[in-house]
Length: 183
Image (tube, rainbow, N blue to C red; front, side, top):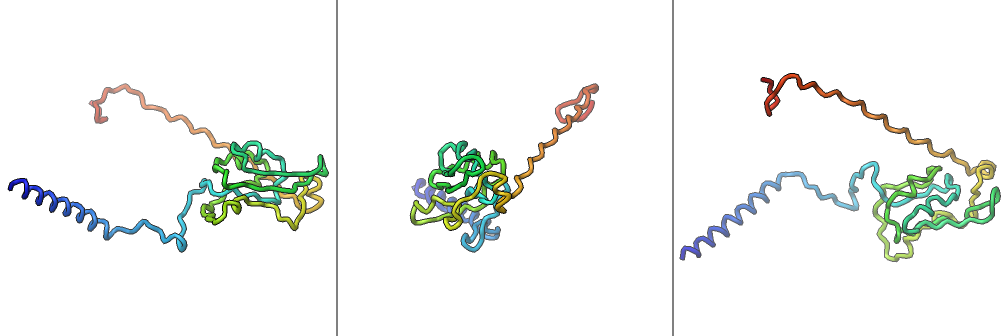
């Protein structure tokens, strides 16, 4: 008989604890966003989808060579001044968003966007072609790009952070106890 009442008491106290937590959270601001209408604010260094500005890209292949999963496809024709880029594509099925391609791009054409929603029904549409087929080819040599109006100044070098000055530690001339009060 005592076990019966103990079980009832335990059930009632358990329900009361749960209700206490629920009532406490009723008056707090909700953290859930209504997704399509409201988007989450992302940090500045968020690694979203990779984007390439074709007006700056000179088809140097550094990004494609550094990509650990080979998701960047660059094709070009010709040599030297006559070299023209015919294809620049990124396969987002393979991309691991490591940002190695963006860190080493000397022209600053490839960047990480804050876009994180590319829901698709067909995986083939995740291979994104950055070159417009109607444009044909894009010149890779700087002189040719300037003549044709494709040249954009490369990104400026990032300033190196200044080293923090060392702070001097106070001398331990006077003994002190654990709470930092001097004797």
